[in-house]
Image (cartoon, rainbow, N blue to C red; front, side):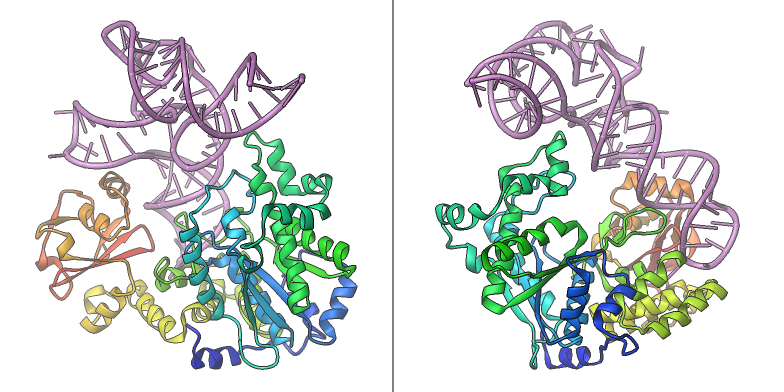
Length: 440
RNA sequence: GGCAGAUUACCCAAGCGGCCAACGGGGGCUGACUGUAAAUCAGCUGGCAUUGCCUUCACUGGUUCGAAUCCAGUAUCUGCCA
């Protein structure tokens, strides 16, 4: 989706000029958790443009919010004049980095190939490919795909000490767990190290960024470049984004917040941000928006003085949703949210507005329902519930609403005469989970 | 290659022949209270044609009136030995 208008959109982004340099700004935004020699890195980033990279492994059909943090770090550095190299892990995605919990199931080559393409398109949306420091896109399969196992062991393996490798935090914890770790996943850090070396040689890349959970893999690269090329290159690890209440950031209803609108609707995406807790909203503005230090300070005041207005949450949701889905789409979901969450009566909303709002929600049509329907049928058809058992439970709990009216009888039948404008139902589960049914 | 042990629902984890759709905790959902926030308290948390039935305790087969629980084989993992 790289278009001219995308470049226009990107051209409106800017770093905060009140900072002495980009390093200072990254620190203030809370984006630096660990790094190699801090003074030298700050110096490098404050000086002549450098080339830097971040890798994205195709382990799913879309990037998610964790990746967005990395994309924004890439973009902020690009805005500071440096050249980003975005790496898609066509090779590393075939292996999978070790996770804390358990060994991964390998995906097929075809699957990974497909995901490489979708990730590529997603990444292109966030970086500028124009101008002196236009981004470069690479795939690590290009330099590993043709490498024989023997060459790999002789040319690369020799530089890696097993003692160092097993001391990496993630490897050590997996070794100690009941699960253990396969040779495949154990080798992941070698592949990532190779990437840094390769990019240093091809594009003079001297900095790798990534999540702090990737720290072991990042240093694997800096060490390899030092051993082979005698050069001290840099690594920067961003902190894990956490919620103040201890829950995992970036999930809604147990599902990841994906950047792909097919996998997470813009409406759901927007709602996710609007629901950010007061205690977290300022941190989120720093990480996920280009608002300046001064602007964020104003929102901090607003959260402190009149939290019930939720202005910081609304601003955050607007900024991030338009970054990912565009302003036009964002305006549509805001209008939908206003109509459906409004205090007013649903049947006072005019038909076009209601229809537009509904189209942003999980939707069902009469084709999926009979002429007679119960609240249980409607909850399941709109996918607000996975099963009738679970829908019945919600009704029993008192959390089921049809057109803003609580429904307490799971057997009660509804038909067109109960619908808004004779054809629409707004189905709700709990306080804020909405679905839409069109029976026209 | 040898020996010993493990495999339970989203995660951790109990159960060791019937009282097991399976204790407990985490997570999640819903309600009360609210500001589409947090905290707190309460209920719920396999499916369906819901007073009943069906599928589930790694997999396949067996013993038994009856198995998550016993036996055999298979797979995967862990530890020790080689």
